[in-house]
Image (cartoon, rainbow, N blue to C red; front, side, top):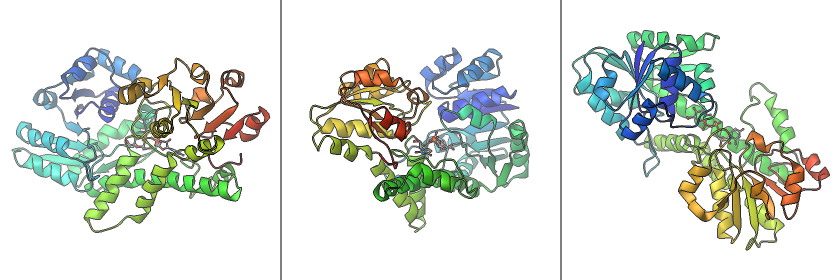
Length: 434
Ligand code: UGA
């Protein structure tokens, strides 16, 4: 099938590359000339494990093309995916201007039947708006489908290739058939394509992310309670997670969720609810708990140093909002750094991928170490903010010899508490007995 993906951001590039990998002829369109020339020259613009190999192969085999010209890009396509940004506006609602602008242009450009697919996370009712924007100028038949993506950064290729489910929102039989054919190779293991109306598909995406964020904030509150009551959150997590109705996944407490999706989507669903005069109270609490959780380690650090962090020097491992990505949007590490520096401390950081991005945002506010161990030199304590695998089994001798004192504040529960005690560390984590 010939398909076009408009927008070569994270979702667009993964979508385009993975569809090319199943034999489709894919053209990706972007207004960013610089990005398009890089991508055409074989230079990948995002960090995502496994993507580069697929990208290079499909580019070489000429199943993947890049252009800045929308008219040219959509010419022969049967399906046009819109993978454009929907940043939160000042009031928290999603800004649809990028999508609607392209929809306007598409109306003029369409010459035969095409399926236009909203891939971006968009508020309920957007498919109707996109339809109306195209219909203003269109002289041919077309359908607008909502097909939300459920990719996780860091495992996006795997999530795309082997999705738990594919949600397709359309009331058109013709579009349903086209989308079903396109996704058939991805659901061969028996995972379902779930067909529904456009609005339900749009809401499904927000409901999924908001539910997962709720699970995390819930566990973060359970962790706080565990500390206060003398219970252990690891035990409670295992105890509840083995109930299928609850599930084992996404029950890990920590220093809050970040990234470009959960914070934005929870906020957008709250906003959408307000617009229909409904107060989504659980989600207000989810956001509130998460804001506080980002600074969960601070009182522990402050207590240890009796309220005085002036002149203290900290090593901080992990800057990305989660492992296997260089994404630092809403990353708890940045909030921790800010709070420590405000208290008069200095910080030396290390992250396997995210340091250039952090440098771009906070510059020389911290020092950037070459590796996880040099970050520890002369530090009073180690703080862990992201659970990269390389941090899970460190050389404790090196940690001991570099730190001034054996003190670790772990926001991701990487180490076993008894083991740390055996090694003689003062070790604080989240929701476990110190
Ligand atoms: C999330 C969803 O998981 C995807 O299904 C969705 O497609 C994506 O948003 C999106 O809307 O584009 P992502 O933001 O890449 O994906 O990251 P996750 O792996 O879901 O992690 C989100 C945050 O939750 C991270 O900050 C992580 O540290 C935190 N988390 C996750 C916990 O604190 N505890 C857990 O048990 C799991």
